[in-house]
Length: 148
Image (spheres, rainbow, N blue to C red):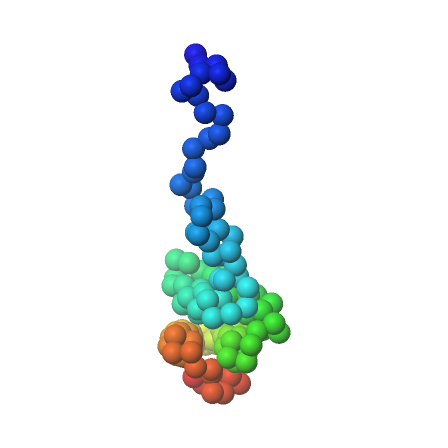
């Protein structure tokens, strides 16, 4: 057993290599994640990815709902470039929900399945279009469009 006076014992723990610990010039994990949560390009990218995950059957609508809430909360504090994307994303969420409800009701008449398929394609195309635009640092030309 070593005592505090032993030359081999050091009272300070060794530096940790766990994520989130700050070493020298490294950025803390909280700051890295902040770029994805606060308004900005990384947040816009994350929302498009969440929207695409929401189109995957096993993921359900939860990722898309999270993305929608993030877009609503961040659009007021965003710069012009990101604001065009947030507006596009919010409208996509609202229109997607409306299309989903109408298509679901129409499944009772056996024609809603086509509406559900069309909504899924529309959702994916809009999300991919937005991803491409934000990756090229371009705004959405018409965020209020019903199409893409």
